[in-house]
Image (cartoon, rainbow, N blue to C red; front, top):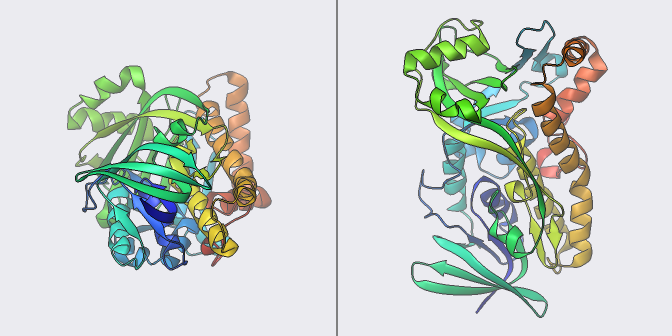
Length: 401
């Protein structure tokens, strides 16, 4: 049985980022991923177009990931938020808040491939791929982990097991950690289009049937996240290109002119998952294994990366037993404000923006107007949107406003 200090189960966007952050720390780290370590094959390196917060871009630059993928990113310099059928609107301009951009958009596949390129340069990382975690057992001062690989079973003894294995986390289940789950009865349909006028702004438009987002991409394209009721998802997925474009215009309008050339559409059913605790004896959950959010506000990966960066920072500073119970309790406490606040805001937005009750319509209108016109409120919104909420990991802080 091979001994390691840290075993990361899951090599998706968050797990890979954590492995990179721990490289050179002096800890013996293993990364187990069910997919082969090849470009475009990791399931989380998919068709989504990510809106990366400023704090996330800062951290990816420091980690040496951005050099491999940043050329394909598009800065977010303006944000426009509105609600269909209501006159309130929020307009955000990065220049007015002292930064050149709020963040950037980047296809998940491009970020994933950038992470793979950076993983290839890690000096000390033990990479197990393809390898699937199939069993864990607590032993004296450690966890014994069994991996299924192409060459048969492989066993590792780790002082800390990190579950970065997604919404349907084996680690969370094996540890007996309960979670709250909500089915939003919505499906996100992800695609790209070419607007008549190249977008210089990220748009989020709320509607009674769910939000629609258009994100600026390279070469004048725009990433679309169209949310529809799950009962209508099959019909929307079956629309021809003309029908799909007509639906986008119906929901989004014509502020970018005519939308053309829709790309491949991929559907993602939307669920919320929130683990009731994120630490257990010699184990911790990060990313979607700890919390899976509605895509409204685009906070899922950004929050998960802050999980990973905070944990890496604390493990490196401790320079001792990575599974020490006091250390893990301190980690859970440090992540509490950001995790609870971001998850609650995401859930409230998903519900509040779709509610058609007349009093809520009026409240929404005045809320959007206040955020657009009251500078301190807008500044607070911008800080949180850029990822500067609660105790922010130092890797993300290079230009905090």
